Length: 145
Image 1: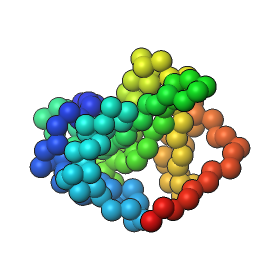
Image 2: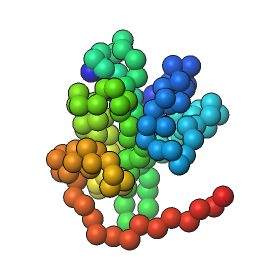
Image 3: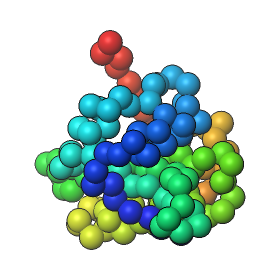
């Protein structure tokens, strides 16, 4: 399996996100070319891809890791984790998560945060199995559109 940080936007990457994002959510559209380019070029975000079974295979999953500074330290958050539904159960999500955790640790982040829809039972089980603890907190969202 290959896990790596995206450094260039390609037709393959664009097509993979058009296929994968609808498997993650129906509430948000997959990014357009310009939005994907902005993500890949962002200094605070890293788009990781997984290829399975090896580096010559097609993109099987993605994960975004954001690392940012706040007054209380360096933080990190994992967002938009999705593995192609045809490839699930192969350890791809776990490999993506461990790669992101290691990147956050190497950057000096104090921890990694993520949120997950309760209906994504397998994903929630994975997060808990690798050591994430469910937090009792109030999550808020303000729609700006």
